[in-house]
Image 1 (cartoon, rainbow, N blue to C red):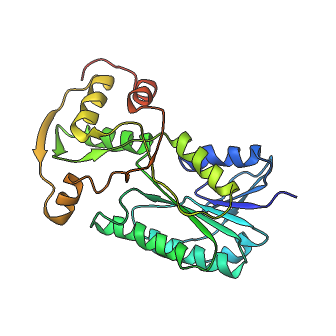
Image 2: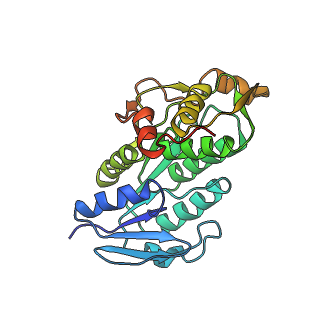
Length: 258
């Protein structure tokens, strides 16, 4: 009998891709969220509060492998610690966690919470795998869409990103989830590295928008880290195939200039 897999964040950007891959491999999937969803076709939805740690025991009952995708702007370290402790109590055999490139090198509070979340996994007593991935295309598009609402768009100097396709991250995570615990695996980033100004230019061109720009300097140690590329994937990282330009052409078709 194929093992039961619990996926947190299974309805999110990456989760929507990875759950069908796990099902296609023949495994029953349990999706954990705060609100639940419609079960069917081998997918069961359960509710639990990761931040509070409530109801995790029943959600993990009978689960062999956990893929932890759920995350947010705050509290990832606390939520992951709750999940990791509950997974250990439940006898989970493999805990797979997605983190971000540069988690151990960028001195920002939200990045430190990502590193603390990794530590919760590695110290849990559960055999584990951690993948650090670059920002997915969808997240970069959301960021550019929000900033382009401003009449003058701030452009942080020296900031570079390596956007990667969510489906490619999902495929790698499915492979890792179905495999044996592997520890910290090579980073996964997109095929190209782009300055934030370059990404903004492409977005404005694709959407037919015109915006003034304001160059800004990220201050302090965080600014130096970003200018040094501390947020980028380490040498030897795996690289995706789908480019930012291809994604943008599909998701942000040209419109009349505004």
